[in-house]
Length: 259
Length: 279
Image (cartoon, rainbow over all chains, first blue to last red; front, side, top):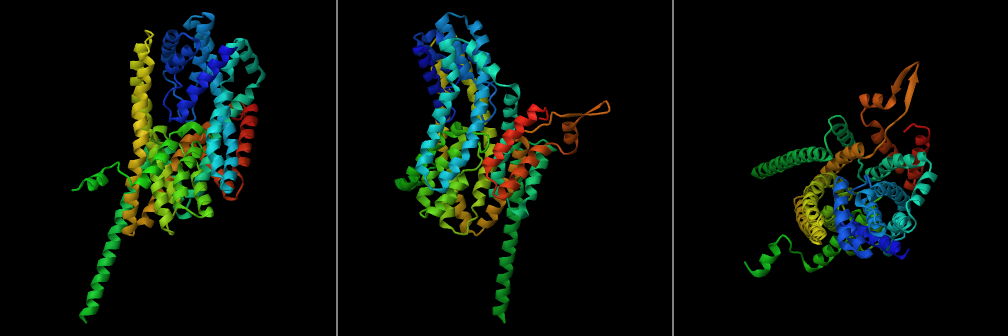
């Protein structure tokens, strides 16, 4: 039980370091494996199992909102099982993959719940209480990581069956509904951004961006470059016109004086 | 050239006051994706990073609140390059606080036009190149149980990332200040801010198209012919639903509907439509 608590805290620390120092990849199996091994007193095995997990989870990067699987959660459970119950690395994988997938569901839920907390930050801004916002930045991270890694504690302390029981309790449409909603939530964020940037006479450029992306399949970088090229052309045109105008007015002045 | 002059021409040199502020911005920007959420992504950290800047340049409470609000809007970038944008935003806040006529909407326009391109570059450097090299080196040592594996893996990722996070904000703040000051002197600043809005709007259009996800799974059965509604929409107006949803949200937000209300509606719509198999 105490060991389960240690593993749980270690993996939360790895995850926190990863996200709060700018994605330094301490959530990857090779690091998590090492740390969990260290906590359980057999670092060498931890490193070896971590390395084999690293290769399996190679394609998965926790970047942005797309979280295919929570590798830290899966690795912590897998390595702990190898070290505590003499499981082979291959057998532990059968356990780690479902837990990693459950972890990604939990992260989806976490990002959705955090969205719902945004109005609270807005209220703090209105009251000019930035000290509280500064605290909230850290509190939010620590609390949400402590929650999403509870499965590590449960599995290491009580075994895998408990996780399956919990998963079976949640109806399928809720899980798939949340992932549908998570795709749509960004629309509110982009709406807020538009509220800041929108100018009626410039609105057409929003639709140009849409057309370039949807019909011509340009990536966002390509669209931004098109915009920059357009902006540079307009800038120099306007500048030339201004120069012409000033030169003309200077000439006019001279004529005036010539009289 | 004297020694102080030489120092001032250095790309990384900042006045002591600026230096103190940018250091704070750089460390705060590191949290990057730490407070990610689906609605405004990394907005909370952007606000957090800008707090020292806003406190320094604005003294009136109302002005500060306006500026805080400005930075609590959708933002998302590869965390290693986060500081580049917050440093630049700091330089724009500096100009905006000195010039009452400065169009502050251009600050968010520039932020939004940078996030796509920078993420493209950042992802390919940090996730594409560095991480793969680190994995190759790290795993080959770690497979034999050597501590060198995880250590090298960590350092190969950590050192270049940390350098980018500490140095980029200085560079972008310095360049930004110089650029916007010279624009203001030549009297073209209003044109520049307008063009920033153009690029910003185009990029937001493209991002709303590609980042908001909405797909109908619903199939109509018309006397034996199965009609997939999504493919019909795709053939006429591809990605019409995400962009339409964004504009709809924008419309309601302009009418001062609370974002919270809209989010709750979207979550309920998501669960209900998945129950009936619509989405």
